[in-house]
Length: 443
Image (cartoon, rainbow, N blue to C red; front, side):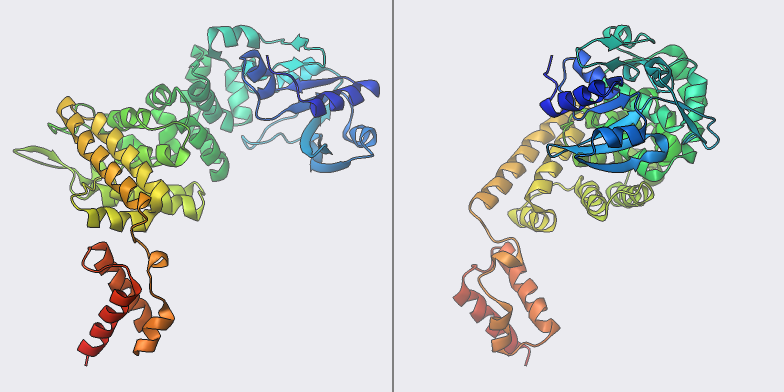
């Protein structure tokens, strides 16, 4: 089991030395029991916020959630949140309690938490307080709501998606009653902000058990991405495919790295517009233009979920290019120039996963994809010119020839195109001579 960081130990000691109880709570306790090093540490204490401030009066404190009893302490360069034991009042908006009341009981505090695996506390000496059987549920690999599942989800509807996320990330199954309430109350997710939904969804996609979570809870996903519903069970009627659209997406998602949320997000969206693009003839089903349309869908959905502009641009471009079968070095260079090295390699992962999730004979496509990746790596290794920054000519040199204003950028792009097509060498003399020829020919 990992050692508690020294600064956390000192915080717990200080609180106890002042006559109060203090515990590590939530995910850090769960992770330690599972043998994982926690990402962060949350502390619950019997001391009230003003008392916490007094205990740490020599340090900087921040009222991060003072009305809910939370004070952050800056100690040895680390920010740690300390929350007073509390009981939540009535929930009216499926998001937050109308009021809170402080309590001296850690057991009462743990009652308000979402799932048993998160409703445990550990003191400075490693003693575990576990009133709801969280340790046993970890052994059984089960996600179970604390107390009444319906009540827990009606209190905070985000818990519906969090339950699915925990199942995905931890590789656990959701207990029957908890699962039933997740399905029944899923529409309550509409009360939750897009930002909170996005955070949980991205974590879900990157879980080691994402496939089962997406498969078993597609109705939950469809609440905030209704475009998903059409994909579920949509038969492709194509000799290239052995799965329906949604099942193909799930299999493809499993084939890309789960430590890169951009690639996994792009993989989830790569075929999302297929039902809209479907046509059928004597040769079977076709999805002409689905990459372009799926890219548009991805952009719209990610905007709704409040992804950043950079994330939206990156994912939508990966989806747009996922059907490109590069034939020439020119095509490889053009896409490399458009999306950059990192995203091009992501694209290769996506294309490979797409092929591996079709009928068996399509696996042969991966040979071509691997060849394209190899060519791209050589282009990058030898620093072949694929963008304006690499060109051995400047805007002022173009201006000296006689071009003006917007013409300068236009000529530079024209020269870059010739370099990418391997019709022109990237050296100053050849570039200047070519620019002069263009200038003279326009007269």
